[in-house]
Amino acid sequence: MSTYKKRNEFVVTLYNNQHTSNDNEDIDLIRFCKSPKSRKEITEYLDIKTTSFVTKEYIQPLVDAGKLKLTIPDKPKSKNQKYYSD
Image (tube, rainbow, N blue to C red; front, side):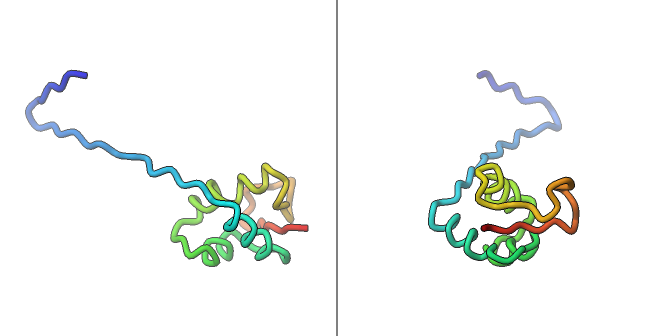
């Protein structure tokens, strides 16, 4: 890739630090969700700052795998949504 610099321009390189949860984290989260928990409660439990990150990297993979269920399955993005495990 050639690099041409123009006046009044600069280049920023952003690296994607992909996170993958491990089995122990998943098991702990599943146990935590024995009673329904909100996204915020799960985020605080995991001690992570952004709810969207927790939803994407932790909650949704467990929902997709059938390990977490939604209290309002017809409205997955509801602000009142909670997640629970059997």
